[in-house]
Amino acid sequence: MPVVLVAVAALAPIVLGDYALRVGTTVLMYVALAQAWNLVGGYAGLLSLAHPAFFGTGALAMAVMVINGVPLMLATALAMMISVVVALLVAVPTLRLRGHYF
Image (cartoon, rainbow, N blue to C red; front, top):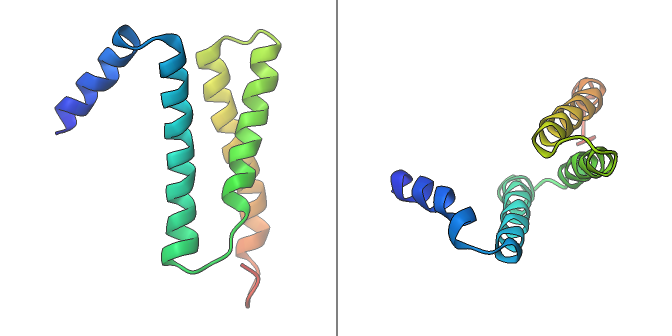
């Protein structure tokens, strides 16, 4: 099954048009965000607004870099790093809290 998924992912840019590829990528991004929300909100029963906030941080960083002419792959990597740094800056003081502060 993993071989089939890799083959489909490799052939998608060749077979699909630009619009279908863009829609598919957007759908997969929101599926990943929904799965994170399902894990934290559904299974753990916790209310966490951090997932959408860090998703938005990465999206904003990516948009600003692409608008300013940074190559797409570099902008993607940098946006992920920026989102991780922001998450760590929020996590360090948050994890020190005791009680019902999550």
